[in-house]
Image (cartoon, rainbow, N blue to C red; front, side):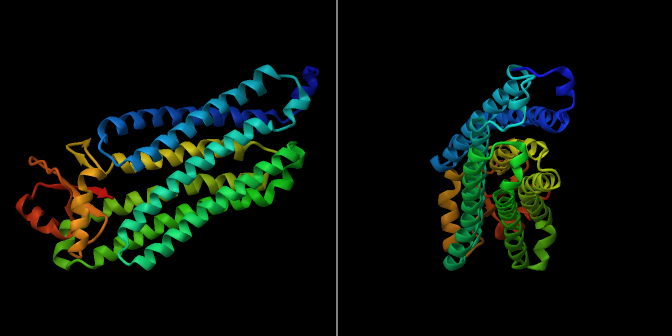
Length: 332
């Protein structure tokens, strides 16, 4: 039953509906960018391992479902049930559960992928096992808290009851942000250790390479962690506002874009991405057997095209032979 216009105007529409509408717009923009990146990935990185392709496909599928549910939810609030005060004061459990599930799936896939990147940079098996356990465990904790949140939403779906959701929301967003920051920090530390292991004479040649690697590592964790923490702050500041929900709706797209940016940025020959993990896996294994830095390779931009990545410890020799070379990142 529709309420009088005066009653509708008295409701906090900016906080409830306005925030969701803005979040839907931003989510749609991010999803459009994601479609472009997915198309580029599958056309330019067709030789990637099946597990990498599966990770991209799972994240993209979750984002498709989440974005469609986002549009349906906005239509339901602003068109189908406009004027229905009772509907405006509740959180539809079907919509919110599917939105939350899609976001959590995208986050988990992204964090597992980055954990595999960390593992490839670590030589000691025991340290690799510990780091993998910590990061995957943190990601699973975030998933578990999201499931807890969905169960509570089924019982307390009114905006007035949001105070009962505080604990699972804090655990979900805090562990997700903590995992992202920890992954980025670990990658930075590992790269700095690799840099310190090289002679001082070679650092000037490899400085652009390390700089680009470090910037990418920081960007990897800062975007997702920043949005998650900002959403948490907004929720704690005003539990009856949908500002944090709007941010959380976009979080899944940011996670998937993180994977795609890393994958497409591995090799940039004359400004174009080229092939991938499958072509260099055998070379990476042989380098590791020789005691060289695992997981970090450098491809070059010059008039000469290199089909295979070049290890950091061989970069000074190649750079001396080709002084015009601009190294680009290949962190696998």
